[in-house]
Length: 345
Image (cartoon, rainbow, N blue to C red):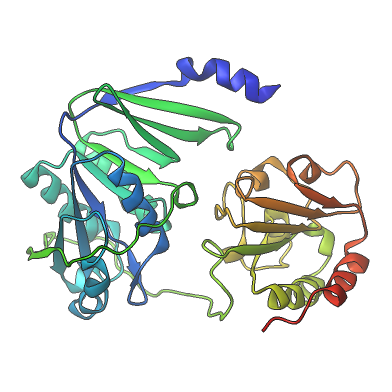
């Protein structure tokens, strides 16, 4: 019922922005551990839907650029890559990143600035938009071009309604892309040209990066794994969370996620949270164990290709979006499931 109402309200949700006649897109090439992020490859796919030239921009230390550039130069769809090396760009602090992008888009007249939706882009793109007096279009899930105008859709109200954004006049567009909505761009047949540009050194930096805390794991990355197994408050303790989900995830070669309730209760690290305020995932298989299915959690996983829910509450909202459901005690169901699954080779 609500979905029908949302459809009827779409014209009222439409917002108007400036539209450039000839797209010239600057794509932020985010990287980590010597590789481009999967989200960046999805953002490139989205940018290609506009047509026109796409220029990638790589920032970081010279060592980082040397590691990432060979991969970036072969991306299908890029027409050029700009590189800028500085110790200030190693950790993408907004106070140092924003002046660089502000000068770049103003000097070169790009019509669009694309990036994946990530913690990094969320930290500096809103600041850049404010400096340029531009309204960013965030978390885009589809792009089309109609009668020369680019049209975007993005989820609102925890994914229960879709907002349509239609530009009507000239101006810069700052767009972040939901990576689960687009395929990763592939490799092209030849290397693209590279141009080195000087960093924009700010006169005074009022923030300093102190340290980066990461969780080391040999398990597939949550945001890009083909199979995700998530646990909720129904697991009752951190010990149960680990003892129940880890063997199943190991057997399936899956990433492990958690509901916000499980994270808040201390069962799992915050980096594993799936939902509106956590990570957005869309794997081929999503298994929800002991998760009731609050709207905030559904917003982060309902685009999964196949959803399986295990919960002893027959009225749990998770069953409304599940493709397959098992009404059972998870402490009985998961061990039995393990006995029926073949060993992973």
